[in-house]
Image (cartoon, rainbow, N blue to C red; front, top):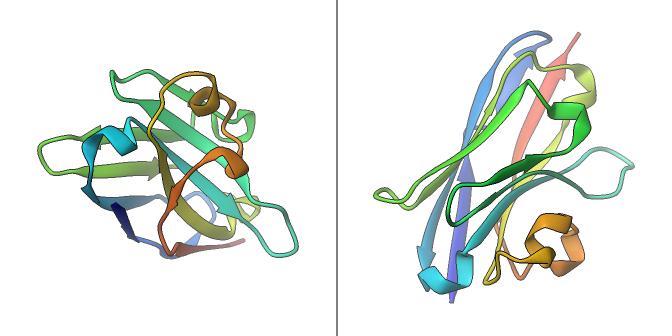
Length: 126
């Protein structure tokens, strides 16, 4: 079993920064691929960034150059550094994991991820 617990959300003005954390526990093999998703008001859940077990990363176009996904294996923690935040980044942010780091990982589709945290809210004011 895998447990994911997000933290670090909050309210910030446009242009500001936040760092989200996701504390992970459970079977390491079940979380070879880790990702951040978000769901804004009235929107579908979308993939934000993904990181494979050996460090390769991928980002959705709207956050490239502003967000950085990383992981500290010694601390069993996944991070999302968010810079230059915009009102469009308003959303509940979720971390997620699946056991494979193949195509399912890279596609960054919510329906293909097995394990989810409870989410942390990010609010950006203009």
